[in-house]
Image (cartoon, rainbow, N blue to C red; front, side, top):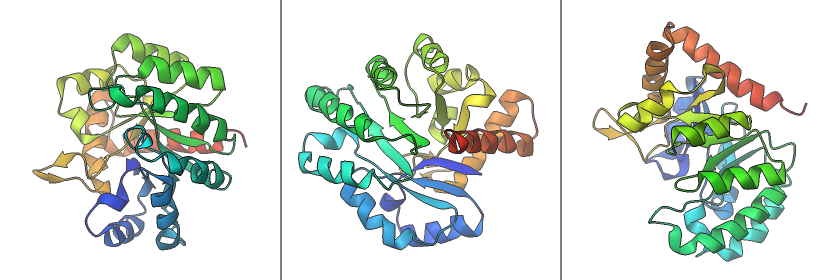
Length: 242
């Protein structure tokens, strides 16, 4: 299974969770909110086969942490996975809109062809994110927890990008509608742990199993077939540019 967007460093007992994911052969893209957080994750995750640290600079953290830009640019030269990056023009982020756009320009300039996996935050900002990705010729990327309109979804698909879906989406009317509109060949699974819930508790990476079951039902497949399709999508992104 694939958890394409997990805040491992913000889960209780992250090392134990990482070891359990490793034991389950469960691939986890361990996103971070700041470059300094990514740097701190490198040593603990060194040697893990399935848990992948991702270099992030969350849009809601940009304005208060401008000193993190140079570390991002420096660390991007060696990072294999990028995330969480993007824009947030919701009520929570609209006040820092200009700072976010300026930072995202620099982030996209720092992303190299070798960054074959990039997970993107786009809440309230799908059109601007898509325009910037297109102009900077970055992609395909993965739109994490997409919450835009179906018309925007179609434009993102037309640009060649992917989507990762999580347990919260399968329980919401809008999320289920988005999932139903996605072609299977563009779908990945995620938890966004610990910021989603499952069975009355905060999610952990193996809760992507509930998403796999939902996708299997949606696509008319057995869960094992749905899981294989998601794995193929992930591997297709990693092979990009080779």
